Image (cartoon, rainbow, N blue to C red; front, side, top):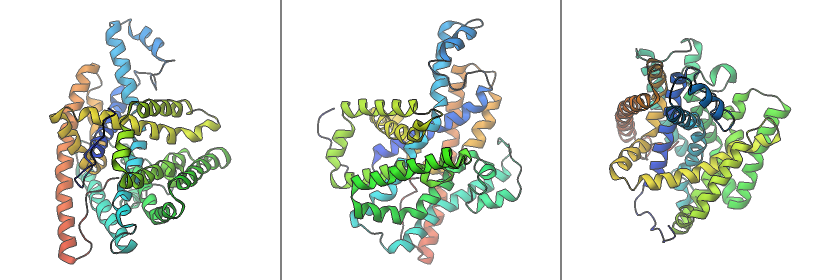
Length: 391
């Protein structure tokens, strides 16, 4: 583990793609589990609720079966925490290529154009597919909000738009805000340096969360991501990591994949989970959990890389995670309702099979969309080609 790690010699950093694949699959399993759970498990399953659940469950099933069910439920329930990893990865992905030159080729106007062409076409297509799909979980009516969502509005008004139609799309609204302010953040990091940049975005994020939750008593959705400032700490971590990684890739990889850093990541994640309290500590929770979980997921990704066929599939999902993200939730929630009466082991097997099919469909659709966008860019000389979106 302490051996020097060679710097990547290819454009894509495959360990990051593996992390994306693991993260989106964890999130998708959570969305699947929401409807499968149907109130049978405590929410969340933790050290306090674990013994009472086992006691109640053991009346109708074996202790081993109940333990397995509770452990799997606890794992799936924590799927939303992988969003923090994605926010860090998004900051990294947007920044890594820019750190080579310090300025986007063609200027920031073209950079905005590329972001638009990478984010919106597949997002629009996902809306249209939802309209015509027969097997989707529908919890909202198609009304004027559909047009607002189609145009990219996922946070005004935050109480009715944040989770509208496809709840996972709230993340699109937050990333859109972060992209809008990204040139300012990038310039700030260039001016102040990594350390002061992290201090500034940390203060911005903690201050936003405190004001929104404890002073303004704003809607919870603003804190989750309806206002970009509440999650800019995690995004800034990714930006800073990209800059340091560009300068010292071997040193970063050697440190990241060391045992001390893994133990530190577990400790930071645990501290973040502990901070999820109805008091001032809450403002630290998402940032700490995202940072700690990023380290943990990096080590898991490295472990997965040792299983060639599994790694190949998960990495492919990571490369095209944007399509999987946009399309999966209405289908897995529909299927989760059909599997309510299944045992946990059978449910996991069925969910894995269904998610595999959804991923293949989403990957194919994203590939076709990218080709279409690439054709339009080349045909009309709009922007130079770029990689699939990392956020």
